[in-house]
Amino acid sequence: MEVIVLGSGTSQGVPMIGCGCAVCTSADPRDRRTRASVHVVMDGLSVQVDAAPEFRLQCLREHVDRIDLFVLTHGHSDHVLGMDDLRRFCDARSGGALAIHSTEEGLARVRAIYPYAIMERALVRGYPAFRLERMPARMDLPQGTIETTLLPHGSTETLGLVFTERSSGRKFAYYTDCKRLTDEAVALARGADAAILDGLRPEPHPSHMSISEAIEAGQGMGIRSVWLTHLTHLTGHAATEAALPAGFALAFDGMRLRL
Image 1: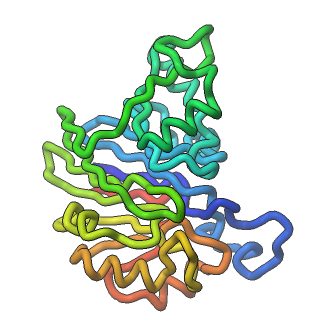
Image 2 (image 1 turned 135 degrees about the vertical axis):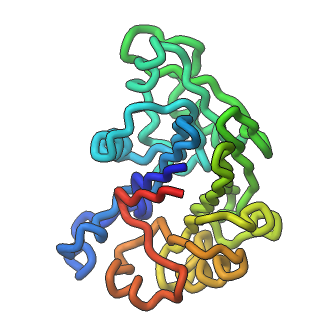
């Protein structure tokens, strides 16, 4: 299994517009963060999770040229507004619709923003086509499984995802944009080889886990390797990572995990 972190930043990205703080002006490339998403490859199956506003640029940078299915964790703008650029992956399917999996809230947001794309085939070459499907609790595929759980995120809920590759048995949990991990989420991820968790900033936030909350949640999962994502400009990569406990690190744009 390979996990590519396309983006590790929050809704405003880093550097932020008009900000001259130490992180926004940092020379460390790990402090340059586009909006959060990941690309997971299980036994050759390419699964894209979310599409940030920088999605096209992320794909070009990381040489993502194939998507077999798409999962939208929730309908917030920093996760959904890059979906028009899925049109290129529909082209690769000869105009056939790309399956879009999400919660009812996420699918409703896609319908509202992309009504022109909800069809089985693109109207003309180069247009997107989406087939909307409710994400099940467990998706069994020839290449492995994707299990889901709902995570609290302010007034909505986010899909937490756990991938298990069939050939290797490797397991990866992706829990972004959440205030806490439910007992079900912890149990679902138990035994995973790696996890990426929401860890917005040092200070508390009403709908995201802070860094200390993410560390506490990660320690409760019993996973040896945990990365924090959805980071703001309040978190300088080098200094923050140096202070993290063993087994924890910060995700960064372009990071690749080979499990």
